[in-house]
Length: 110
Image (cartoon, rainbow, N blue to C red; front, side):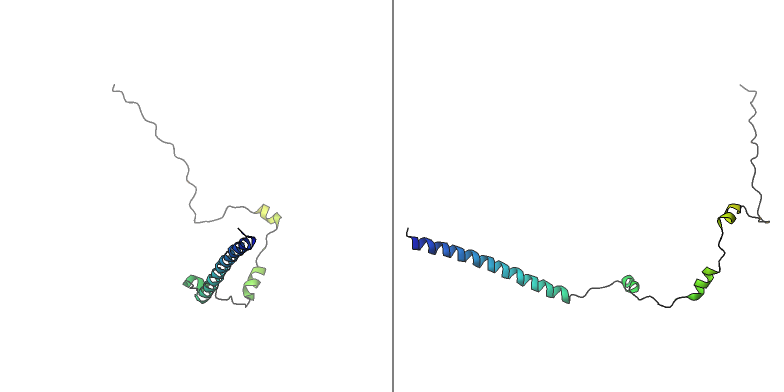
């Protein structure tokens, strides 16, 4: 086989490989563009709950609620130690006490 024919054959194989890579790259780029267009035009749908969640918050600060918090009584640790968890409910019923249960009497019959 002559040298000229060998280089031509190698050149043809190389050109075929380059053409294959270029065609595959063009196919990938084309599919990428098509998918980008499709997903950019596809409108997202929001459920009613999601639509309620994205409503902007009211930026007005409720100063009345802050004033109520500031006027609350704050307990010191000493006052908390003196605090008794019992309450003085005059209408409450007393705590029930345990009644003795009757003991069974043995019978005389065998």
